[in-house]
Length: 106
Image (cartoon, rainbow, N blue to C red; front, side):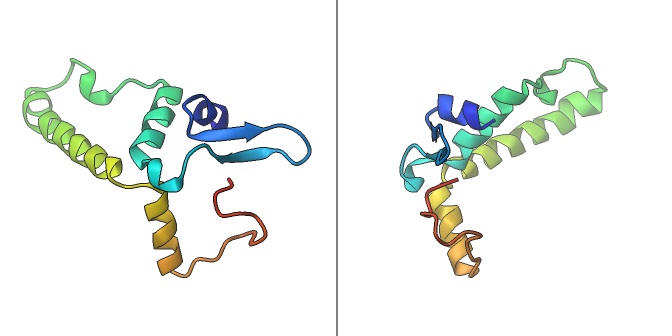
């Protein structure tokens, strides 16, 4: 998964004994929606709402609601950045696991 995030320019990878992964861009420029799309692509599972089979109530009532909810959720994730998550963590006084590593490292 990390390599896919590198391929999509969300992370940078560095090899070697002091290697690891770092954000490829500023935290405020990486949306949660971007990360979700990369993970979905990696999983390769079809969207259940695209399956043509189902009951009338499922296809005509439940599925449209589900599609609408997915769209609303992705719109929210499009406006939420890694910086926003970091800010929330600071507000909740969540401590870093390794304080000696810069906060943009993964």
